Image (cartoon, rainbow, N blue to C red; front, top):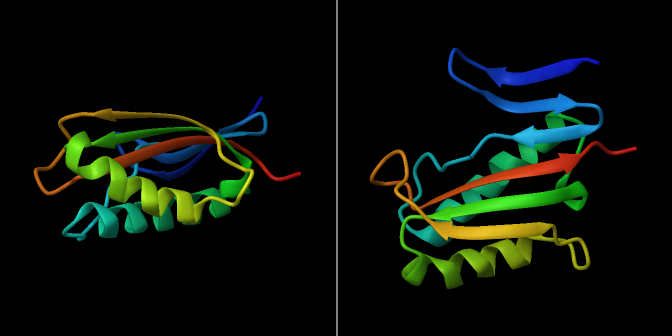
Length: 117
């Protein structure tokens, strides 16, 4: 049973694969100023990591979305999220409000996927 770690440092790995599963750590934006821009940036990072791990958004099983302010951020995040998903391929999902790592971070998303056949 091989565990593969992708984009690792001393604290975490960006992704870990194990037995056909892909686990992504929480992805945060680098520069976006609003929830819409930050969500787009985070989803682009997820696309890149999933591709590197041999998967894609159509193989998502689960997503956890953390918002700094769920009242202000839920609708704009959902608009970007819904446009990003392929119709009929929505994963299970949990969305919650949380204090995030930096004050400028408004959204963080982690996902679990299966590798493409």
